[in-house]
Amino acid sequence: MERKGVVTIKGSPLTLTGSERKEGDKAPDFTVLDKDLKETGLKDFAGKIKVISVTPSLDTPVCDIQARRFNAEATQLPAEVVVLNISMDLPFAISRFCTSAGIDKVKAFSDHRDASFGNAYGVLIRELRLLARSIFIVDADDVIRHIQIVPEVTNELDYEKVLGELKTIIG
Image (tube, rainbow, N blue to C red; front, side, top):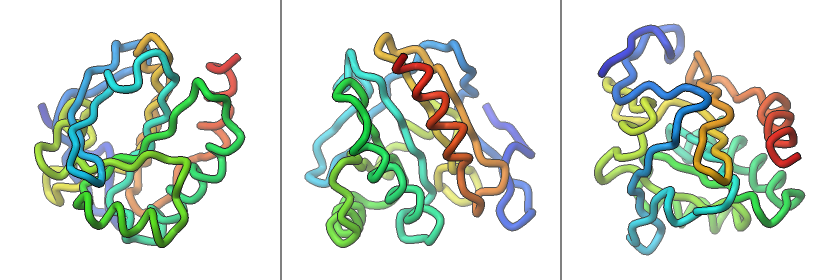
């Protein structure tokens, strides 16, 4: 499945591939890799509220800001909330970035091997083989409660909206 015109990069339209997700959908499982090349998926966070922060590449300024912002926010969240960052970066690059940036509250993963997450959530950019900047909040019952796909990949998320939605879900 392909969708054109959902996102752009510097004004140029891009194509998203994979299954389009909507709020209220059951969140599909996926397989990503941690820094030690261990497979991890949605099922590994069963019973938790999952904030899935999706970045094209942590080696870019806006993605760096996004990862640091969620790392800071994660310190204020209750134990039943886990914050994940998923990108197409190699696991080794993710590990290096997290160490140098002091990212210790966000769990960062690579979708590079199979694009499992990107295809399952409909945010894989065909032309770049990167993930579109987005956020998915998945409740403890694995229902997608909030989605934000940033129309211009080089722009930041609406953090206040995301955090407001998260507070509503936490209760």
